[in-house]
Amino acid sequence: MKASHTELIVRALENGTVIDHIPAEKLFKIVSILNLDTIADQITIGNNLESKKLGKKGVIKIADKVFKAEELNKIALLAPTARINIVKNYEVVEKIDLSLPEQINDILQCVNPMCVTNKQPVATRFDLTDRKRGLLKCHYCERALSLSEIVLK
Image (cartoon, rainbow, N blue to C red; front, side):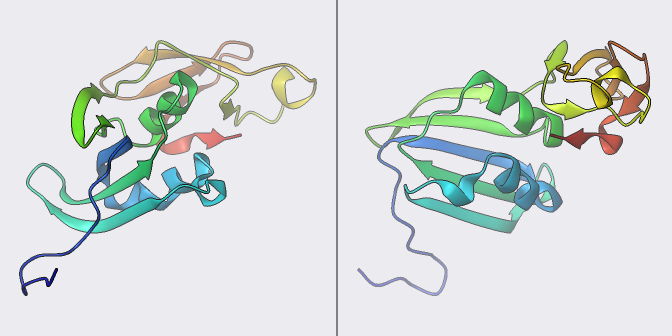
């Protein structure tokens, strides 16, 4: 098959997940937090693609992978505008729009150095206090932080 000057040849995904509408500047952070560099299955990554919604976007296609809820929460923390497409037999069978969860457990590190979670082996817990502005609060020390301040474990 020969490609024209206006098309690319990328193998269609038979089964797996497509993460679409990722802000371009967040793409490689998502690759990192999901440890996609350790997956043996086929992965296709596109960045700085044109998007009417975002201007520039990133896309990740992962063969034979369906993400767990905690992995989707990690994506939502970095790219709440992302959309997850589940593909089976070359067809999109499910579309998932991400949103921030009401509670985030053991994914983030508290930025307060005096927080008990940074002193003791205690799992972190953050509560969403303002979905629109992306504000979270540590359950233990009550430190407020925005999505731009988060530190992933």
